[in-house]
Amino acid sequence: MVNLSRYLFLIFIFFVLHSFSFAQQETSQRATSQKELFQKESSRIQKLSKGADVIVTGKVTQKKSDWNENKTRIFTRTTVQVDEYLKGQSNGDYVEITSPGGEVGDVGELYTHMPRFEDNEEVLVFLQRDKKNNGYKVFNGEEGKITVMSDAQTKEKVTRSNMRVNALKSQIKSFLKEE
Image 1 (tube, rainbow, N blue to C red):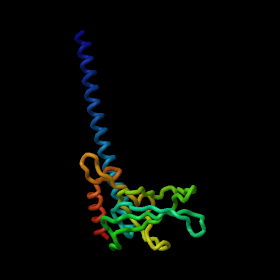
Image 2 (cartoon, rainbow, N blue to C red; image 1 turned 120 degrees about the horizontal axis):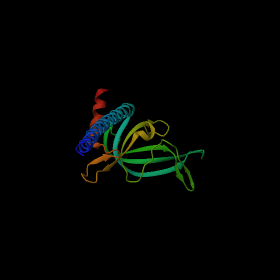
Image 3 (cartoon, one colour; image 1 turned 120 degrees about the vertical axis):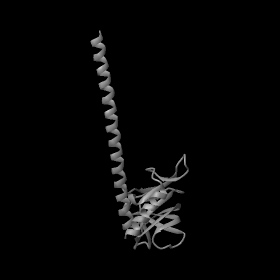
Image 4 (spheres, rainbow, N blue to C red; image 1 turned 60 degrees about the vertical axis):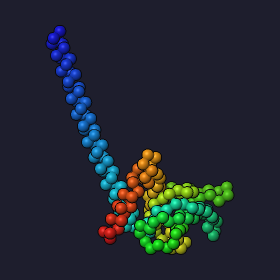
């Protein structure tokens, strides 16, 4: 009976130590993957920052979709009231962004990997001059538009991936200083 108790005790200890080791390994892997995600995101933001002509934060105030001249494609013009220019000259309190797709009457066009804006949406956008429409288009498709929201607990502005917007803006500014 004593040998059986020792045997069971040793098995118990083995499982406890094994579980502890597994938990440590999982925590280490999670930390590594979070670090890799941060590095990937940082690299993406750096490319967007350097490639964009203008970077702004602001709020969507208007969207209007229309046909092109030949009535073969629909484009949406989105007006953003600018809170802050992070890159580029201040061209006023508003920027107009043209994107392919939208709805006119009963007809809608949807393009994959293109940003869609919502009324009153707060955004941080990386823009490229659109020579055809004398305005802007989002640089690098949907990657160039970041939705901004308030954290429910802290009320701080964050992105959908829960990155603090102030930290993101600081990161963008530091990338721009390197240019």
